[in-house]
Image 1 (tube, helix red, strand yellow):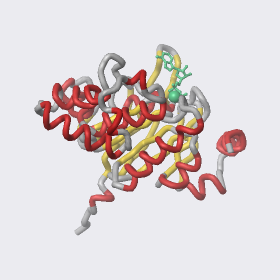
Image 2: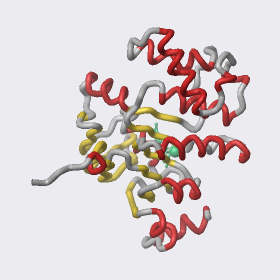
Image 3: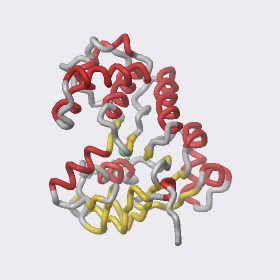
Image 4: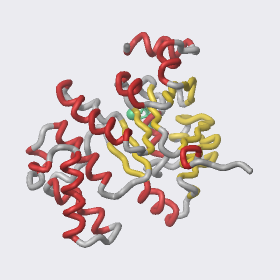
Length: 250
Ligand code: ADP
Ligand code: MG
């Protein structure tokens, strides 16, 4: 009898996924299994399909061929499945995407109330806990425009966590930040990783990748070219395109 530990449980299965934008073949036969609790860093040149791939995981983008299964739910046209997956998967974007006309606290309590039907007082209590975890409880009544980029991104992370996601997707979360703010966001992500969250992060922060990633994936031209645990990936990249990419960013 085989016993499956929770760590071995596959939470994301991508099988031969293909996507086209019109005639443009943007994702080519992507195969990827992600275990529960696994931290994956995705890197690669601009335009290689990294954002498209992770956006397919919560159906912000549709794919045309292959299969994507998230936490046992097939991502297909079935709106019930799409809604179920979106409830499990949090996403943080490069440009924060906060609601500018809502306060920080309102940004955090809106979806829990609307989607999870959580009463306001409870949603606010949870929101304050997460604002404390990202170290900005004092900003709760401000509007996003009154915060620094680093603070806004921490609000965006806290907002996702308020929905109790099982998986977190990050798409270049520090690329729009001034250098002095990058660390405060990465520190929050490192803490989250330490708590066992399943994470897929598109980032070129290679220090973060070395600290946190179980696996680094290199994409180019819509394909996964190479993947490995971080030390082998950085110290001994196999593919010429990976070597070229690393020589340009390191
Ligand atoms: P990355 O995140 O790796 O920079 P993207 O996934 O954003 O790459 O984009 C991959 C390719 O698909 C790029 O060539 C981009 O121009 C193209 N692309 C992205 N979004 C669209 C779209 N909505 N319509 C057409 N082409 C797109
Ligand atoms: Mg991108």
